Image 1: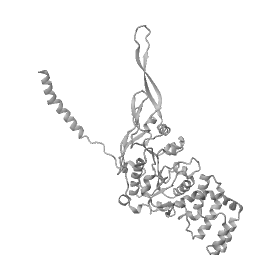
Image 2: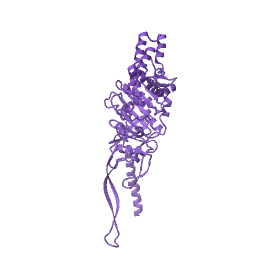
Image 3: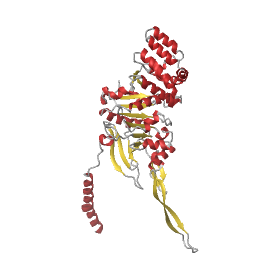
Image 4: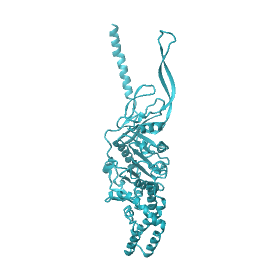
Length: 459
């Protein structure tokens, strides 16, 4: 009778209560993802904000970073933010090939052209800056001969070994006046300028592959992209051509002095030189640009220099981190978040002073400095042991990532075809775990004809 009564009680009272609780729980509003405007208003804005944020994207596969970058580009397009996308053979960007190449000479005065070329020679090839006077002479001659319209191809093709012969031909064909001929010849005969012409072939030889690869492409100047509020994809071909990199970033550095725009780089490494324009743009870009710095392994792109990485990620920078394959790079990210005092519990056995009396057991509790987030957090998911020898699973599965607003504020995010969304915020504590999310399995493929205003894509 007791069993039957208990059964009736369970049916009549317990089950209805459980159902009511479950129904009530289902009605509790679930957190809704914040819009793209909320999550990325700091750097996907009109760039009128005086406090702009940079974003560092590191790790994962090409498809992961492509999805994040194109989500940002969608926002840049909507907000008419001029954006220059630089990469070194990043395959997912091939579909956006615009058959254009950067030419520092288009729409640029002779002084700036000479300065940009000199910066590339000095910082990338260690050529003495005295070469500037020789480069300036070449540019001045071409400006007159071509009625102010010169290209990098014209400069690279200049006959360095027969300057006087070239001037003679130009005078005979009425491309320059007698007075201009005399003035150019007098400048050339200056021993410093004439001797330093011998230094220039090394610079030009590094730039010729760019010209040859882009024979059918349209030369374009970054200023045009910014003025027209366009988006330009530009392939540097290889990250190892330091001359081309320095040339491009020298122009960007000049552009920051007079314009506001966005720069996205994928797989572009630092040069590791104090005066390099590449390094300057990356770590001293607070003025007029918003930087999205992306790569398979950002610590490696910063040449594994911890100070450089900290400078890059400091200030207003935010982080989007996928799984890394390099243990040393994962350790760099662990160091970025620092260490804190953590409690360590060690099981101990206590010896008895009496023969035959069993040993006792106890816990030894100590406090020691340890990573807030161990290196394993930033590698592929796997089973690890925490500081108390407990078996735990740390790391990121394929497509998962962390979005980190700063070292003390971790945002869980979800990346979708509609953009990047912030879901929640947690402040790491001694026992906190970085929240993980998964990307959509299919990469976002932008169709310029439907998703972008064609007038916005550089043409």
